[in-house]
Length: 191
Image 1 (cartoon, one colour):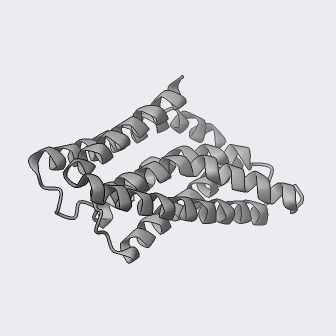
Image 2 (spheres, rainbow, N blue to C red; image 1 turned 90 degrees about the vertical axis):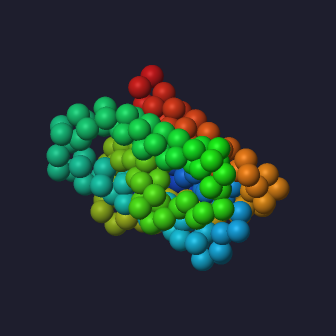
């Protein structure tokens, strides 16, 4: 593939598609923690961007090295995403119901789990970009990361704004959103 406007637009659209789950989780994080500092919001967006860039590259490497093993693993992706997001979502709902909303719920471990859960389906993008040379694959991953970062930063900001307005219910709403995302990823991967 030649590097040109078509390449950039294709990967921007790919980034938008991949970032939708991360956007929803960013929104939920902002809802859950409406007084979140800007630095933490940037960290959330950066984490999702990193995972969305790394996963397609892992997929690309798998396509070029261990394709058969990856095909078997790909069947597990919807199940893994569902389990991870449901566990996080149920935790947020429990916090919201018990009234523990003011405690900071999103630590580094939870953020890493969210990053994996929302980007694990991006492994299959390695098949989509399989014809790319290494430099093109890295550039595609970089474009996807930039798009994801912007979309997730907007998601956190929107979530924070509405989280302040719905305060005590924000954690419950965020948890429900995460569970719905998990179910959507599962349904898309299984059906």
